[in-house]
Image (cartoon, rainbow over all chains, first blue to last red; front, side, top):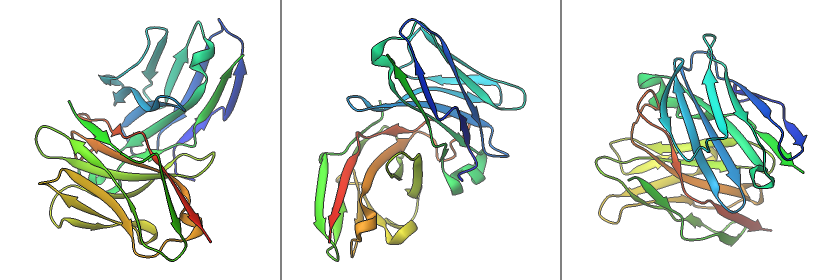
Length: 116
Length: 117
């Protein structure tokens, strides 16, 4: 167990629907990152939150949004789903400062989203 | 912009032989480099990192990586491969050594390592 918890592990939904993926970071970590992993695109950075605030945006579609709550858990919302959104979605967390440098980023086991 | 390239989609080695998984990077400023491993249906696991200091970095499971600034490379190596090393390996670069408020990891496409008995 990495300490980063992602739920659900698997999700099957229809096109046009909306889903929410949840991530609880490792205890003490302030940063949460969302990544999308697909066969053709590899690991794509979506968005980063730090202590509740958005800090960096990557290749995140407008149909996707995220937030980090006061207890530091994060949710990634995917709407108007398309077949091409089928992928593995990873959350990672990191600690600030020298602790983060020592341990790097810790990844959850991912949520596999299948859009049918 | 920061970028990472892993020129090989797949590397095949025999068990007991040395292995090398290649990574080159492009950054402005100091590079902060990482290797991660992903086993089937699992998340990424941290192997090792280069922040500063000794160019040869030792990590988990007997892996090491050599930072070469002139060649902008950070190749992953292991003297003697095991079948259990078979997995997907990702090289990554970050603009920040701390992974705090300033940075995020940019990953290469990944290299599938296959170790045969």
